[in-house]
Length: 153
Image (tube, rainbow, N blue to C red):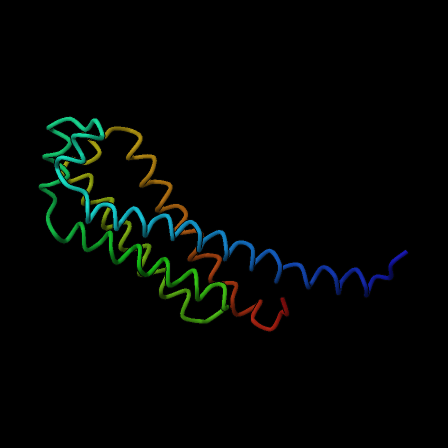
């Protein structure tokens, strides 16, 4: 049977493992987001129509103001950088994720104001809601860096 000190020692080592796993998952999540952003920059009207989008949907997407695209880019880049910083347990992960969260909230507002949600429906609302919730969770998780900084992986 293990002694209490051994159990405590094993328990204190676990946050380093789960923290690293979550950081890697967040990195993969944000790579997917970066690919979506690149896709949004390179998609043409013809490819949108080929993807079975209605003319109204194509018009809404192609008429978005540049600040909406900029918010998307800032959100993706800062979230991707934040994931790397999270894995490295760097103190700048938190402010980086905060910028990302703000950018995704701004993007969501832009989508609501410019008719993206109305044109694309509940699936797009669910996607953006998930993105904002994940961004908020990553902000909260990045607050743990100070307490886990000294834990070995």
